[in-house]
Amino acid sequence: MGQEYGKVVTKEIPGDDVSGRVSSREVFRKLQARLTKLWSSKNRGFTVFWILCALTVASAWAGFALEASVKGPVQAPDPPRLIISFSPGSPAPLRLSIDSFLEQASTQPELILTASGVFAQHQKISNWSINVQGFTGYICPHQTAVNAVRLPRGGPHDYYLYGRAALSAISGAPFVTIKLCWNSGAPLVTNGAYVSADLPAVLAPMGQAGTVTRILVLSHPPMSDYTPAGGVLPAVASGQGWFWNSNISDSLESQGRFDIPVIASSLPGLEHANRLALYAGILFGIAGGALVSLLPALHDAVERRNTKQEPGEASEQRSRPRDRPDSAGE
Image (cartoon, rainbow, N blue to C red; front, side, top):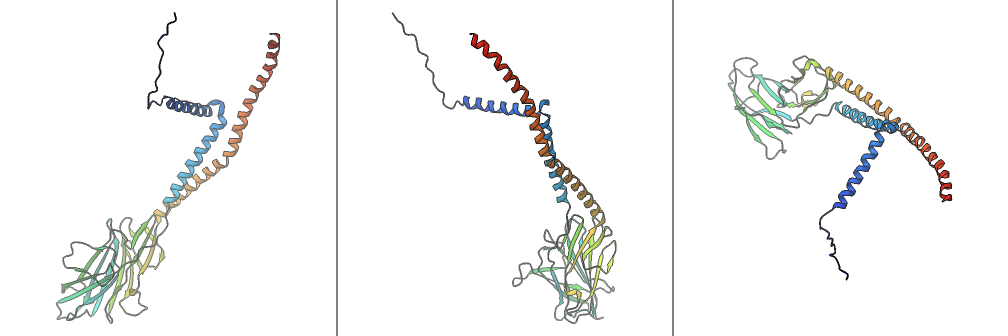
């Protein structure tokens, strides 16, 4: 009698990717073995090749990073245009003196304009106004004596500032002080060792006598660390600031009608930039030398591998003839 024993039934479990995991492990093991073989003491040629590759990439990357930190001068954005005038019934001063300070004493650039003048003896009040054209910033806060209105018919950044000032008996005391601020787009830009600025034009009513003094002020670092590198040279350059003087006039030859572009360079900043450029050149030289050595190193590594394989192939060929008689005797 024949008895039929129970049969073993196998079922596939869905979602069980054992073969996939095994194949992934095999690939990883082979890759690890290959890398270990390349880095082993038996393959010094390939080790040198990979070291040269890493040295080339690292040196080139560091060189480009240092080179990018060496910056040159940039063009400053266009400044606003300031036009001062006086209301009817409020006579203009006999002589007007305007000081315009473009400074970066804090984190944000500011433009401070002050005006003083010589008025008639009987005049006690001056109703002034300043038309600010092409202004991309905002009116600095906490100016109680200044009223600001955005002009609807002007450009998108035109303001009309006005006020009523009591004239002081002290000669030279300003009757107008306004401050303009920027979050971005100020006509004063620091880029590495260079400072680029564009001092705004200041205009007065036709026939007005007086002077306009435009001053560039830097605090960190101070102006004493900078020298002119381009643009209009200042009439006076000191540690407190650079000064440009011009007459108030409606003549086309008057400098007050035009912006004053300025480029200044910092001596300590230039020395630092030159050191960075030198280091970048050294790194590029190292990267170039390593890159040139890659092909010889690879050729040497391949030759060493072929040299080590030839004795093994010769020993196999010598062992085969000795195996044939044994097989024939059998």
